[in-house]
Amino acid sequence: GENVEQHPSTLSVQEGDSAVIKCTYSDSASNYFPWYKQELGKGPQLIIDIRSNVGEKKDQRIAVTLNKTAKHFSLHITETQPEDSAVYFCAAGRGNQFYFGTGTSLTVIP
Amino acid sequence: EPEVTQTPSHQVTQMGQEVILRCVPISNHLYFYWYRQILGQKVEFLVSFYNNEISEKSEIFDDQFSVERPDGSNFTLKIRSTKLEDSAMYFCASSVIPASNQPQHFGDGTRLSIL
Image 1 (cartoon, each protein chain N blue to C red):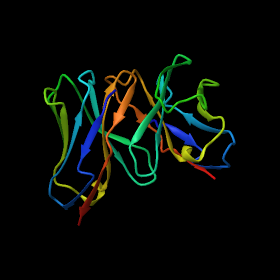
Image 2: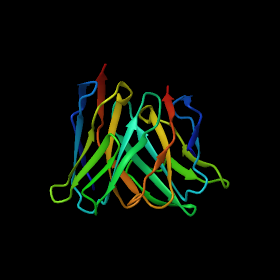
Image 3: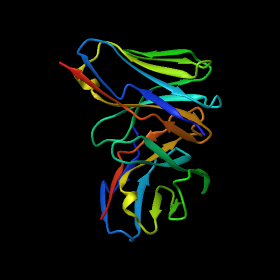
């Protein structure tokens, strides 16, 4: 089955700096890679996604890159704000299910 | 924006009892999912459901678990005889078409505590 690794597990950045979270996956059949933000007491909320036929996607301050050959994908948040503080999960989609990474707890220090 | 809603937000149950977790997926979505998140761990897939039958299930989804769409709006997860290790957050999700290339939208979860 699919195995998704995510690093780092915790990340602290100063407000205004960039944050980068990296994930690797094992199954080349995975073809969809969403990123979710989870705030305390809430369910995961989709923030950006990328499909396997695309190398990079950007939405305002958030961007995701995908390297299919190396089987890794990354989330980039620029100009971080305190409200970006949350747990971020990457996932790899294959068939009817997602395989989630272990999460990154991001803290943006004002 | 349409949302997936889950009830109850918190369920406390004695070990060995049956529990039913309820979900109302987004109305035009056709695929439904249950996931589990043990405290501090990753979100784990349990089961996917389409056209009134299970599409895929994980090793976690054993004979103690069952899912049902009893009417046109609700999607339920039943745990027949709960164990201590069933304590977790349970998330329902839905999507328009299969997860292979489309986002799943998650509810805010039900925290299940087994005593």
